[in-house]
Length: 260
Picture 1 (cartoon, rainbow, N blue to C red):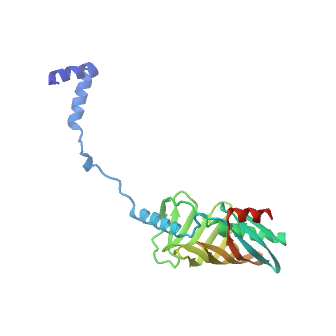
Picture 2: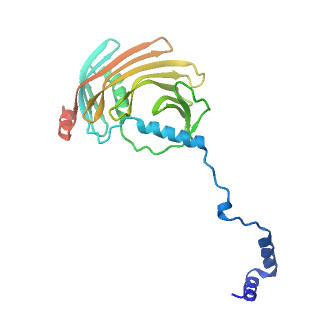
Picture 3: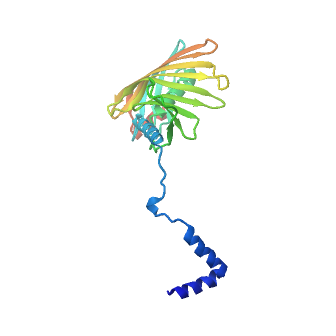
């Protein structure tokens, strides 16, 4: 298109005043090539914190293609003792039957916790940030999870501490030692949980745990748990759960066990 025709077209569209403004702006605006535009620079520390948190999450032992299992159970708690059966199905639902059912209230939540934490979930990366510059802490780097009221200490591929605080609760879980599976994945061995008053920060209780596992097929199943609990009023509770005669389940064996 000739220059004269172009000007005539712009005059019809913008009018003379508008065309003058456009021509003036075109001579004053500094146009930069795309390659010269500033680029967003990622925070190296944030990237490192996110990668470390992802590494630890992926190192946790989980049970893929879990068929379920059955086991004999012995529960001891504050001088009382009973036996029974445990059934865990492929969906990690538990059925605990004890001769003294009063001990189920203490033992079933513990079994649900140690078995439920083995459920496999795809670990999508979660943004994290180092909480400080301290790199020589005995329990590793302190990492905050973006948008969450929870922090972790991470050392290598082990989550050594969980710090969780809200208006209603405040507790810290410390993992003092771990088991490593045949696949070099992480299972808890010795843990300590400190409970605090969410307002004052005063310690209200402590729970110490030890865990043991036994290899059955491709799965490291729990075989023993020992717990010592203390409270702010000097109360003390001691209990243990021992599992034996583990058997990985088939659909037929699970249905038979659950019908008993």
